[in-house]
Length: 431
Image (tube, rainbow, N blue to C red; front, side, top):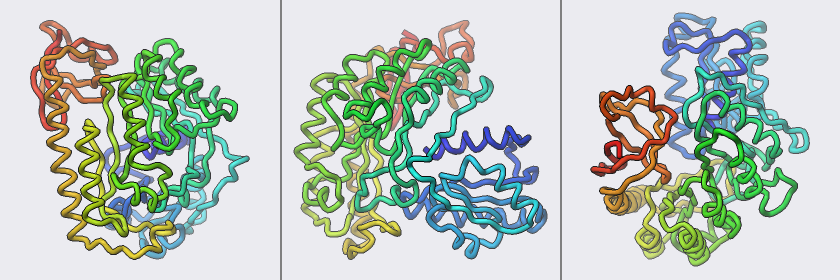
């Protein structure tokens, strides 16, 4: 979502005459787009802002802005803590970013804007893609905010209530991206399963997938993130029924213990989660599953941690995102006693990651010797090779056939024979 927001910020500023630069010394505006989902991510903001202290000392006219979720969470307190920052604004004010920058320049006063737009008045920013800026794969937002209020999650506080983007707007944006050269689209939202922009029905998201899948020229479709509680049989069937919808599902479990899941406010049990995994794998046996895991949630026992490990073994995810719990301001869990010591959290996180390395190695090894379609995204870091992704979202590096220019394969689906597996990626050769 922050990647998508950053692109919209660039487009808004471009229309005001700005152009991007990789050299901060050339910049008139330095903008940090921030995330507060984890304490570590939030801590990076102060460090990043501090790195521009020298630039501000040499060139006081440079505007240093902080946008995104940390900006929304901290507001004017950021101006107090970081004297080099001139402008702070939250996600709902991205559309005003150019005006806010000019306001700072003209008034020479520091500004913090964290207004939240009412659900009824919220308007989604529309992407304005240019062919030279569009890659093979792009992101398209379909909702903002979240109404789930999981105990550990700061998103409802910084992103606001859930709002679904009208179906026609989503389809039109996908059409613009495809016309500009995109071949794969990932629909994004905090909980795409609860999308209600096609009339308000339970299966609105499936209706949206069907509509987007019909866009001419679109080769691949993905989405993230799903909430297990709202994952329906109709959505599981969509993986089977829509050829353009790729066999990859990110389904965050967070914990393997039903008691911990209840304390987190997740709204499902371990057994219900596993039943949904069985449902979708029954329809698409080769679907690749990924997930999120939090270790050390307040009150989590050693036995409950072992339930998470056993779930990872049982499901065999392709990969996971794993984190040690950290209290986020304004969340229900912040009022709980954080009774799992930091060293224990680190030990549990290490166990989760070590186990997943073994599982990932098994999952990748099973693909060696197979033939798989790879959508080429561009040239690889591996010299004269290209890279792309399988339907299961796994990166594959391979050398083009003799006489084929690497650049000519971008945006094309190439059948590849997988010859070897690395830690997280595959190697192959054109089949």
